[in-house]
Image (tube, rainbow, N blue to C red; front, side, top):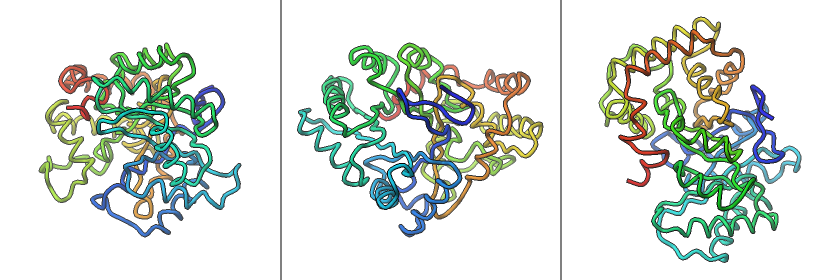
Length: 340
């Protein structure tokens, strides 16, 4: 079941369609807050209905902070925790090695069972990723994992994994998807439909560039001290793969005009709404600098309107002037930017 505000992940897990991403805890480049303030902010988000958090083994203290937050909560009141096991370096895949990685996640998150473990594998030439996923399925059967997902797998490998492992084995693939980066529309959407898999979309706001804050602003220097790492990453994509700063400003003006037709909406709301209205998308993951900034109230407006045919046509008119359709070739399929 998928409604406007919630969707079902796997066979029976109902979740909100906006998740809170904690990758900004991986570096002080995004700013930092004391641990207690971060945990307090988690409580505020949960109280507002944002009950799903996206973590990773390489997001600094994210797993530990999440574990500290949930440890004293009753079982039925704990938020959903999605973490990752990312294999960046060559390894010999054994059941013991996979189990050790899962157990480390469980210890850090202070939970007996991981709600969603998302798997990233760096080198496709090393086909042990199938073996690793088979071991993860064993650990799911033993109760240590509730759901297994992929992270930044491309279309061909996501299809392969779902086919080899069988129906219901993989519930999601976390990939980049936004008005700027439309690569999931070139095959990943079909894989999702064929295998009943959902996309968990990140980068939907391009690190904050797809917001009112950047409307009417001059093109920034790529290595300006005023940009955070995410903004540098997406600015590079916009200028080198998508189009020009002038066209990006035209897109922001269009999104602002659309927002004005939906009273109280922001550019960010429209950008998020555009992604969520694709049926193969389960949820969007919006990064949060917990304890420093709070956009939870603004995010709630995403569900106060729906895009009209006129809205969609105006967005498409801008995209036709961009190189978005060719990014699947120039950058590569989903996740290729991490395997260059």
